[in-house]
Image (cartoon, rainbow, N blue to C red):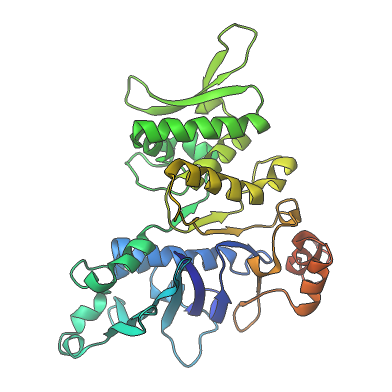
Length: 387
């Protein structure tokens, strides 16, 4: 399944924005236009299902921080999404609308679930019970095992959403950034531990394929494994071709930033099944490697399909924010796979290519040629003044 449509109201940069989403999607726009905030709306749905409304809102600083500065008549924040099954069409619609009470506690205004496949409303809140006990409106039905029984598939789908923005320094020294254990950290604090805890056969199969791919960018790398040291800390160990017969071993402390980021990107593609949100995956990578990233998404998922040996395998959705000309130069990227976020005084808007853009793309130009310039500073030229 994948997210096929989203509507945002009063969410951070977006006062009122809609977008159609495809299984592979690239998001471009100027700095501070809302690319990260768009991805965070999807992460918020994951956190709702995993942690609950109160935690998901407080983790982001509260309702007042989340609410768009351009909000007008309705001060509530709303996220409305459609979920599509590649084999059966639109499957679910989920809408959550919330605000805060006088004590600044996040409070639902509306929660709605529709089974689109069977054209049936599964949940609509507030209910009469909610009206009798307003405290119930501090929790979504999505986060409650008893309440989400009829749409648990949707809740599980939201939980499966993952976000990846690996920071090499964090992978090398996780305790230096957080002495306490963390789980599912997008920046890499628990990456090596997650790899170590992956079932051994799966771990070996993934590392073998990742090593083979990495060798194209790092020819000296022969293989990768995960090892636990005497202090109980996991390490990613690579064997590098060397003048000695058996090569030389290095762990993540000696890997380059680019090697670690490419490794993390590859591992994130193998790990998990739900939508994968990637923020600027081009960082630290050579331009020729970056050019291969869109094709990499396809090839890795094809490799996963072969490993699973299932005819009904459904590739996971990959949503990427980027500024990279090299990444967007891949001519396989279709016009429908690109969203452009444009800032405005009334909140950022989301749009796709216009007919003129589409004609240029069909004529053989790339997204980098046609659409990326539209995400440049307004004057088309950036000049820093110090007078």
